[in-house]
Image (tube, rainbow, N blue to C red; front, side):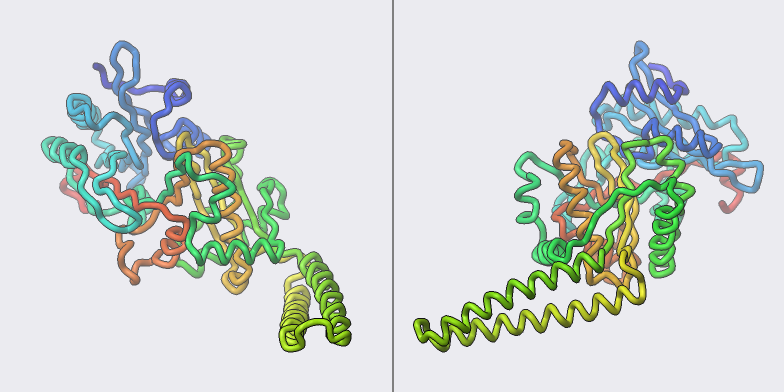
Length: 416
């Protein structure tokens, strides 16, 4: 076995020929994004007879102009049950950077679940993770107990994902989600909330995307990428990146409500006619008429509210946006935002429903809701409400191994 640097094309060929799981931050596409943004990186691999056995995409984050912190997010990727390979990789990685004084520290985040969960309920520890931790600590890698939620250069330690097994279809998806999600989706469908994939290079749509994300960023106090970043992603990922918006067409909804009222009025007239003929049960018929009248009043109130919204926002009202990335086995919900005061229209649920169906149709193994904080069982967690939204789609926490760090002599002296 040899430890060596490989090219983007080598990684691309390997990943296209193999179906092992990896996330976006360990893909050849991500390496191309880094190259486009002129961000330093290396792809470090183990080969045996020219066959790739392990690899990691390492990002170089600049520190104090001259130095670097080198980080693999959700990597390296390898068969962690092969302890010989695991030992070789991490020993060679340490040696590789030992003489590079500009690299103060190297951080790894083994792509291996440390704990197994059913939804948010802990089931058991993963023995392979225990073995890997022993190997890492034997080479002086230190667990940081830190991740994206407090350090933006690190990967999130916890994800929430739904396994799209063969029993789940686009037809029965609605039956396999929470009652709240079902109700929200059905309401969005009834109100004709429209889902659209946008062209991020169209200034009209890029401004909408940025506006929704900025609105969200202020509310959650967490930086959201702007359209400049998504334009770079789109150029590289092409059809593997999906940028979605949900919106309300006021005129369409008002027209549908008016048509519904017309139909209800006709039904009411028929019942009144039958009532006058005295050929049906009077009390039951009066109850039916009363319910129809309530429906007309309800629809008229809704028409009035939608008209008011139209006067404020215009006919087309954008509700939410989201980005999704196709990453081999995973269809990743990469980012999302919404206008909070318009959340009652359930645009976020409508997008999620359409994109999970998309993932099912294209045989992805996981619908990956991406990062969640380690404090997922605490109502005080910064993203608690976001996790509750994700849980409506019946998945599990994926609790990966910690981010580990090894420092050189200078890094050990400095507080970095």
